Image 1 (cartoon, one colour):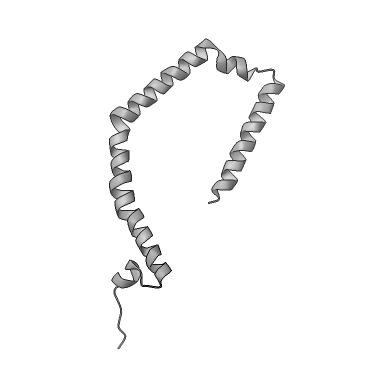
Image 2 (tube, rainbow, N blue to C red):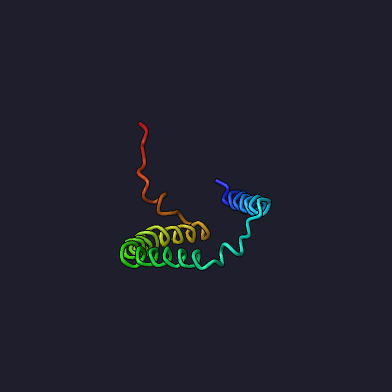
Length: 101
């Protein structure tokens, strides 16, 4: 998947949406700066903060620190250092061999 192409497409879609809204005389600045909009954005931000602190932070940080960093990232770095040194990787060392008769 080409992430950079996806980002460029997203930027283009946002620019087109702004142009279309401008064509129909929508003033984005007045909409964003309106007290009602600011109040709504503040409320959503509060909900997201509560969701992160109370429910999501512990499992996500556990996964990040204990599974991704400890198991995957350190193994990834170790194997690349072995490849750089011309040594066998963990995969090559631990792969079962098949003998033919």
